[in-house]
Image (cartoon, rainbow, N blue to C red; front, side):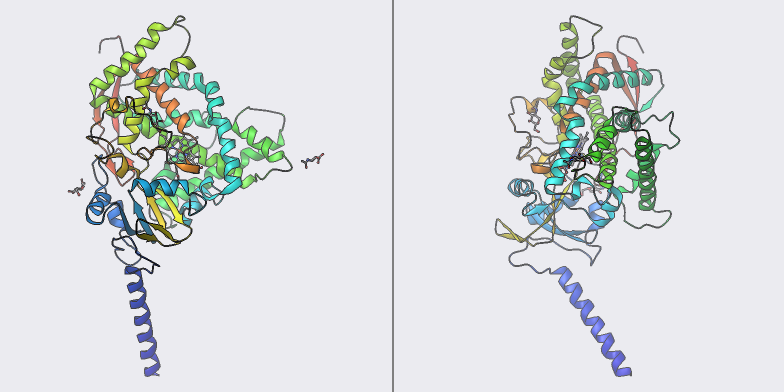
Length: 475
Ligand code: HEM
Ligand SMILES: *[C@@H]1O[C@H](CO)[C@@H](O)[C@H](O)[C@H]1NC(C)=O
Ligand SMILES: *[C@@H]1O[C@H](CO)[C@@H](O)[C@H](O)[C@H]1NC(C)=O
Ligand SMILES: *[C@@H]1O[C@H](CO)[C@@H](O)[C@H](O)[C@H]1NC(C)=O
């Protein structure tokens, strides 16, 4: 009996040792990129998420580039990961989407975004959904919603100017959420029993957290938020089906029409996940981008001066002063677009883009084994002095005369390849119009906060509190 017990114990010890050995020395048909796998299972997760206050490339990445070069291996939340800060490899990862690499999310995230979310769908279904989104935020519809974006911005700033202080991140997020909710599902916070925004708030806090679904954890709250939103969307779907002739002319109506087609590949589940994702996609990213832009402008009076001049010139040239912004005026905002690029370059809203290797991939003498994750790391590219001189300096003028294709090797704020952000034009438009309203009508001064933390997602731990003044009124 004892012997059997000892044998079993020995077997367990041997297999655990073997497992740990394999963890630290993963199999590979070739030359694995250098790096460390960290602790068994935990990997280097804690280092990766450890907070830092710099705009620079996260120390986790920077230290490893120094030690191992531009491509290295690590392990994060139980996955084996190759981190790429190499321009050529990044390009290859984006270009080979659907072939050697595929977008892929861990189960903890697909539970949040839905198993039928856009990021987990491939091929023709992915293309079909992308086209659906483009009917809402593509070039043609942007011309239509253009003036609405302006009036929403004006309305909000008008309110801000009557307050003592405004916390920018929350205020901008509210503005964008209300606008997007209205466009997508005709959501009216005044009339709805469910506070949609609140559910999304809980949602974001849990998004990058340890995926433990137990009451009290951030992940649990996040899942609860998701469930509430999905129930609300589902009820909305039922209600609209019950009254098919009451068109609201929003994105939801369009989705319902698509669902009705008898040869459609769209399902109810995919449709609801899509609306959920779109509510989220604009809200979190664009509101960050705008907040960061205000922060950079606050710290860089010369850039603010030139921005103001560009927009005052637009007003001076305008014949009908009652008219809102015109499409041609929007297109003429050269400096504004430079400033937006610079904001996205230095702001690095997206700290990493993840893919999965579908087969063994050889690159520069290394092998990326099939099944491993690849993390493309935009900050490392945007903040490399080889690509951008004096990279930590906010310098919109550096974009002068730079002629780049929409996704160049050195600028990847919106990703690249097949999965290039479908909302990029929409995001730029919202930012530009916001800045136009801001600098033509208002001045502001920082009151408190404005410092950042990266975990590695960007946060303003103390908010960013600002006081607004009408431009021509004394304080
Ligand atoms: C400044 C604002 C924004 C930034 C920095 C940003 C960034 C990105 C990035 C890096 C990706 C690629 C993800 C990947 O390759 O896995 C992406 C994809 C995507 N973005 Fe954005 N985004 C922004 C605004 C928006 C807006 C306003 C929308 C809403 C319409 C949107 C909708 C999407 C969607 C649906 C995808 C998935 C595309 C696909 O899988 O084919 N984004 N975004
Ligand atoms: C940030 O990173 C630097 C360099 O690795 C380090 O010295 C510092 O302690 C880190 N932490 C914070 C909170 O800034
Ligand atoms: C869709 O259904 C309608 C009526 O059920 C039918 O007349 C039509 O031919 C169908 N269209 C396609 C493309 O299957
Ligand atoms: C901003 O970057 C994009 C690349 O995504 C490029 O196409 C565009 O020309 C840049 N804009 C300016 C004003 O430099």
